[in-house]
Length: 436
Image (cartoon, rainbow, N blue to C red; front, side):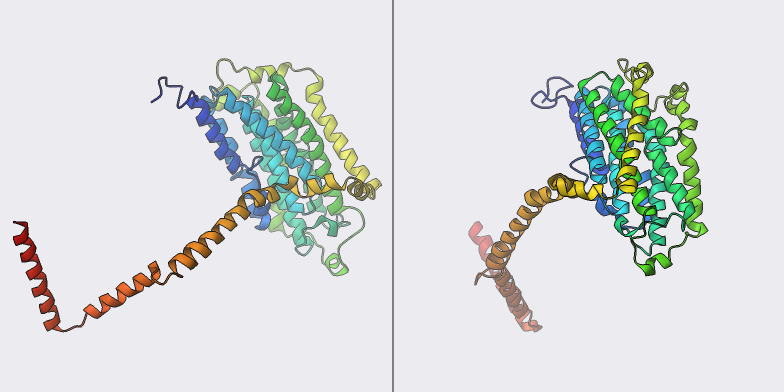
């Protein structure tokens, strides 16, 4: 039994352990590094389903859990440090993978994974309000991008490979405009929704003045650059350049019907205005009344105040790197489209590393799937086929023999049953007398 309430076993702090275990659950729910492999495969469903799963409900539940558990997490600094490091690493990892994917929905899926990393490391440095703010703004522009991708796929006769698109912006202008709005918000360009929340996340990471906070700031800055790059890579490959689809597909490219465009337009409004509308409530002067103790900042946590005292270059830096990422994408895919292919050939190892998603699937296949399959084969071939089914007097044969013997006893003749009852009675009386 523990001697102190804060100790669970062998000196492990119970609050820290609970915080870490909660975060492990959140990692699986919110596709954080190591438990993220299900996320791109969840793209098989229709884009409305993708938008609900990856923008507004399922994957954001892990972030919501950590933020609502702030009364516990505030007293688990080690757990918060783990949240920060994993979140920052996820933001960077997923952004690197998104830069080379060719399926339009997979690019947006890895973007979701990256943005969830932002939310987690904001919560990890104690800025739970900022994490929830980005959760809300992200819901608008990421749902917009998923449904916009659905509109593109519908226009392209169910084609999802961006290498087979291009030259369609004039044919689907409304989809093109809303995809631009979603990408501007995702890249954190002023004054769209993502600008307010992503800027705030990087500010609190810098304002944490800790080793893990600075690591999160660096990963977040790198991810901001890559996010802008892959967003405009997607826009340019999808809508610009020469048409790369076959003639039949290009003949049938058309704008989506109103039932698809109206939700896109509504989400585009949200991706434009939710940042500056909700910033005062979520992280500004009205945040205490707005949250009303649903989120707890401990007495030692002054991160929301410290974020306003960072150097002037800190809030400017995400915009600069975002514009740089957009510029690089324009250079690579508009001005000199041959550069990406040459770079992929020159740095083939790095390109394949990113294209294969850091080989997580292959790693898990080697250490988990194949050993489990080999063990199952052993159990089947030895346990089932040889022992149970293969032995002359194995369990299966024994069961069959017992069943056949029991069937013979049931003759249906009253005389046989009466004889069996008499024998049983004789045995019972004999055992009773012997026992006395």
